[in-house]
Image (cartoon, rainbow, N blue to C red; front, side):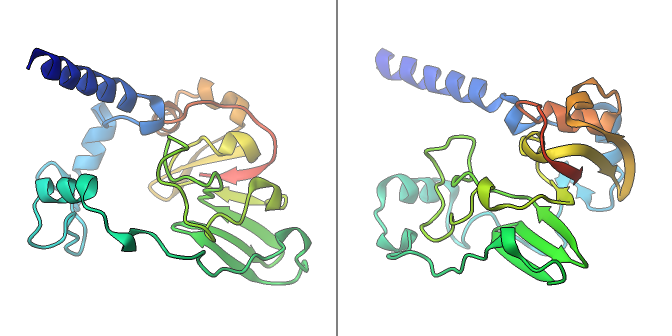
Length: 214
């Protein structure tokens, strides 16, 4: 019994320490929290979606969901074969071609009016801070950073980890307006609240690459 209790305590401590890493961000506080509370969509201590979006299947409890996840074997949780997809040669696109390529989830490459735009790129093959978890299905991981051409605009809506690999300039936006222009090297020195919040959610900051907008 004592051994089980010790194991549980260690698991809880490990989980708490791991999830406090900068990559997971942090809860808002101070002026930022007050600004959030003023949003018409913020009620009962959290943001409310405009349409009902339950976290669990109707009629299924959290414990049932965890039990099914851990113990039940369902052969339909993964595609039986590689997902059909077409890989576009982004490095050799005609300059006047208007192109939209969906990488999956919120990731896109767009070329329009001669401008190349990269949106929320997830090219690591895993949608997780841990590379061995939440792996992309076969056929959904066909693009790597080597397939991406020099980009005019990089839009990141999640965190700054990827910007350090591509950007020469970073444009930070808040509430639809630009609040700061800087470089990846100087991001860590910024004192603007919006930029500070982004920086604290990133694990590392270093440059090379393209003009970016956040």
